[in-house]
Length: 415
Image (cartoon, rainbow, N blue to C red):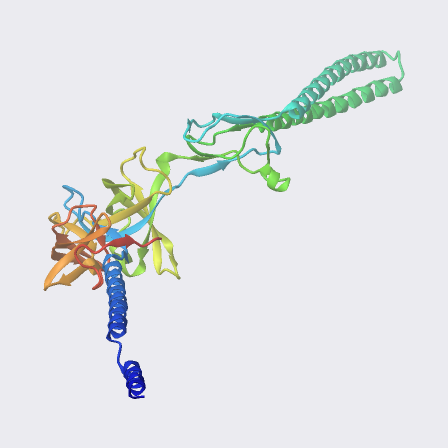
């Protein structure tokens, strides 16, 4: 009996005993889970910091421009952007509706004034021309017939008058002969008018035939070919979308100029006939001497700008229509009439100059990174500032915010 009691107490004590092995396993599992969560948090934070540090900042880039033409003694007082335009450009078309049988042009080809560009089917026009020639020949033959009859009638009248003087015929015979002369004279005059009408009809038929040959109105370069052999062309676009209204577009390259938009607040700095220089977006290191042709007397209310025409003093095959360009307007004379000294450095927007560490710096594009360059601001020209330490054509950030630092990844804003 005593042994039974002892066994029962032992089992009870065993049930009350804490299993230290199970507690250790649970604690270890909890520590591992917590450590994994902590590592994930740290990895996420690191990835966020890395992506934030390496994220590209969208910026607007502008090109540092030369403040003066070399040796010109002129200072740039204003800059404006625009496009190359052609003052003489035409979409060449036929003057009549017809089917193309020949197209003799290709894009990029130079043509002379009067050169044949295309031909239309001309069978109908040639038939009309032949008919008009035949009518003219018939009219001229009748003129000869009436002229001969009139000459004979005049001789008959003379004979009748002579016989009347000798009282060999009645006066009625003379009057009949005179009437015949008058009638033939009128018929001859009418037939001569018919000849002139036939000549006009012949000329009209020749013009219609000439319309089937399309010629260049001026010397230039073909920049577009719009039609092919077999297509119908018409100046009135007869036939809807299946009819071409033009054969090609021709540009007189000698008429190229630049049109720029000038802020009306700075229009007083632009002088007709004044000196300027142009830089094409495609050739940043090439400066083209230019001059102001005219200020177009109309303002754009929405943009608060005025268009200015810029003439190019130097022609070059690299200059093409619709190219982007930047124009610097130059002040060639000082206020007292003396020639001013050429400005040094380059011109950049004043907003491109930022403060970093108490110094004036400009951020320029180095691939996909922004690099800081200390500069020394100089004279201001409207919204532009002359600075030293940059090369002409350098692409700089227009308005660098606090997020822009040396080495920051950047991407240029789209148009």
